[in-house]
Image (cartoon, rainbow, N blue to C red):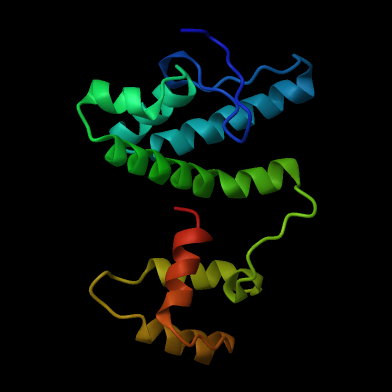
Length: 168
């Protein structure tokens, strides 16, 4: 396997042993940025399941087609495609905050989320994280209205914020 490979989009490269390497100039500023990118991408890859990580690595590092990967793993190609799609969504979610901060993307339209815009976002996210699986969203919706004057009509707003805007 090659030790360095560049990729066209947000996953720039995957090196041997699951380490991430980016082919850039070796000046100090780019080297520091490369280390930050490596750290974040490795962290994002570590959050994937083993099968997701294997499919991503084989598809983007080795250049294997999803069909070939499915055949070699003995899986249905549609299932492999679904796993790949889910892994890419997870990687995008886990890398989105870093990409926004590190590369200061201008002109990028971010989701218009009332919870993200709130000056109390950090406090609200602590409340959302504290919700147990067996309890409903009613208590949190009532608390957001009482404490922060944020009116939430349906739990889907909170679920979407939790799924797409909060870091794990």
